Amino acid sequence: MNTEIAGIAFTYFLTVILAIPLGKYIAKVYAGEKTFLDSVLGPVENLFFRWSGIAYKQEMNWKQHLQALLTINVWWFGWAMFVLMNQGWLPWNPDQNPSMSPDLAFNTAISFLVNCNLQHYSGETGMSYLGQIACLMFLQFVTAGTGMAACAVVFNAMKARTTDKLGNFYNYFVKSCTRILLPLSFVLAIILLWEGTPMNVAGKASITTLQGDTVQVSRGPVAAMVAIKQLGTNGGGFFGVNSAHPLENPSYLSNILECASIVLIPIAMIFALGYYLQRKRLAYIVFGVMTVGFLLFVVPSVYLEMQGNPALTQMGIEQNLGSMEGKETRFGAASSAFWAVATTVTSNGSVNAMHDSLTPLTGMFALLGMMINALYGGVGVGFLNFYVFMIIAVFIAGLMVGRTPEFLGKKIEAREMKIASIIALLHPLLILAGTALASFVYVGHPDLPWLNNPSFHGFSEMLYEYTSSAANNGSGFEGLGDNTPFWNISTGIVLILSRYLPIIGPIAIAGILANKKFVPESAGTLKTDTATFGLMVFAVIFIVAALAFFPALTLGPLAEYFTHK
Image (cartoon, rainbow, N blue to C red; front, top):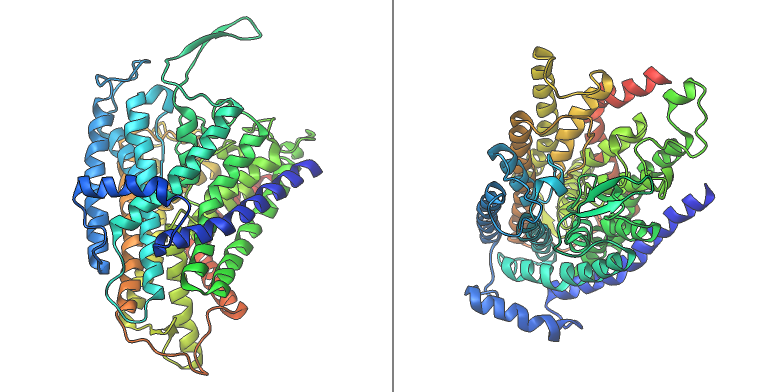
């Protein structure tokens, strides 16, 4: 048990140690400063810009940034729908996997387009290699780059005194992919390949098991997809069981590296903020708030999973290894709990154990990580969500002392607060409205093949599905039969709204504030790089989450826990 805890501690500290220099490097990339990869990747980027005709040095205002972002996303959606609905006859399909139905293709295309990677299919039987590489892996790179580029725009706005020019979206987007995501993915893929993860284009292989049975084992370009699924906080696995599969995650070393990769760039983006704005104390406060929230979920989750399932304990069954249902023995209960929290406080969604088998309160902490959606969060967009809470906290603090709220020298007025409030309330609205609709439909038609657990846990399964969709996470309580037109379409709609509006809102707020007159700090200015402000933001986050989600959690995981206590 002590070894398991040491493994978790090592994984987290390794991540932070790597994130600090990576954050400094990211800040240099966005600031246009010289880096060690300029001579290698600079010519590639220039060739792309010349070929595409994009004027990447032309400055854009915040509206032009959003127009560029949304335009390229529409083109990617069309490409994804074409490939997914026609992969059955398209080339590079050695296992002869079929094309997707329209509703499943819609859900999958939207899911990977919005960096969620919610999978209502099993990868090895539902996707061709063309679909896995030219569609899904492609989207895993560009959607992660989109989120990082949006974050760079907000960094620019926070740094500016008074301007409506916030850099060039295409420049930030391309460099996010080429200078950050691609090199990191290449290194991780090589290590995974060395550990035994497949990287080929061959079809299924016939192997004979120790029992003498002959089985068909899927292969393919797995290592490359696993690398970007983790680093880009995408989470969509090559295989149906994701990183619980021994070919996706073959060893304890690969488990450490994959788990560390989940939060590496989200944490690095926080340090990049400090370097870019030259406000390291602000970055430390943001990191501190996020880390406290993260640890409040990790510590009890690890403890609960190591203690075992309370229902089995009631029956007098010893669980010396902890709660091991749905978990891999090569990782253990503690490491699986740590991964579960890491993947749900970010928008990653990959799994090395089945979340449906988590003990009730651990399942609740996984839900809360997605419900808050601002503790590290996804690459780029995690900070955008946190930025909204910072604006609300500054506004509330200003009201408490009777001053016009100011944030980094800009007055926060009604327009910005309206946008921030709408974005903050949109997230619980989408989750709770979707869950209410699904519950209403199921109660009216209990014969629907949705739930294997129709009691409190069944409600948690439906709540988890919409929470995962709204948080762009992609993991699931897989007792839910979700590959149906209802779930494919309803979660697809939630995915669209929960991705783009929370990006549009913070960029709009940042752009509006950047265009305002800069107000120098005075004796009465609220300092945002103090522990007091960090505590204020922390309180706002958890009060909003508690008020919005406590009733739903009471009906699901809390009721399940007290039933078996």
